Length: 295
Image (cartoon, rainbow, N blue to C red):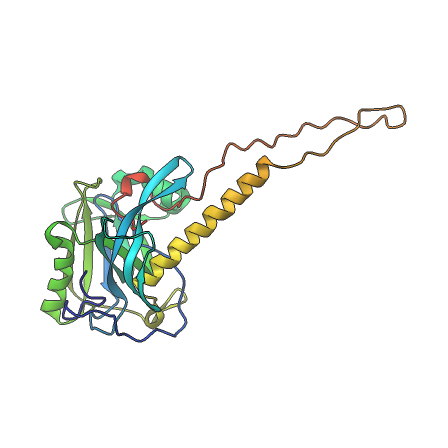
């Protein structure tokens, strides 16, 4: 792992004070599809005390979704606000993957219209229909999704740390991560052919003190964000499992057959079979976007 913040790239956040300010729970995350371009400002400066960018380790875990078992990246190790976290399931033989999470102020996302099916599934057809079409100087058309909010973005470091090194380059060149606005472009749709480019623009960075009810200063650590997300998913899984178990064990009421004294009594047909006994599944990203998600 590298440092909990980006400054110096070599220092860690293991001696940082616990953050006691109010924090917003897991919320919006940035998802990009093949050809999408996000117009953003990186929120953290990159200084050691700025915990809004962190690295952490994940491991492959198994969950149960609507369509059966699936694997996902679960939190293995990271510096939470309460101290160093290490999952009980992780041992010396566990294969870990280093990732980073960073808060972004997303102004807009230029969506590739070739991904119309996935966009409609994840954002809703009615919502996508409101996005205006814009063309680049070369004539390429995009659907412009206005945002204006803080979003979490998480990725692996990439082959030879190419993705992380792009962030380091921004810090080295500007002395800060949020001095200029940034364009993040995704190319590719699969785990093996997907890459990202992160490039600064000539526009000055803009991080509002508050957006959509969130305070920039109080954005939680990425490690806390994803730990809370795991807890939310686990709670939803348990709730769905309990509901499914109860539906299978429901005691049916008995109904007396019609009699002369009770001529209006009728038999009632009860159907308590559940075709959906699956556990919780996230509903924001389609399966073709597997490289995007931390979970």
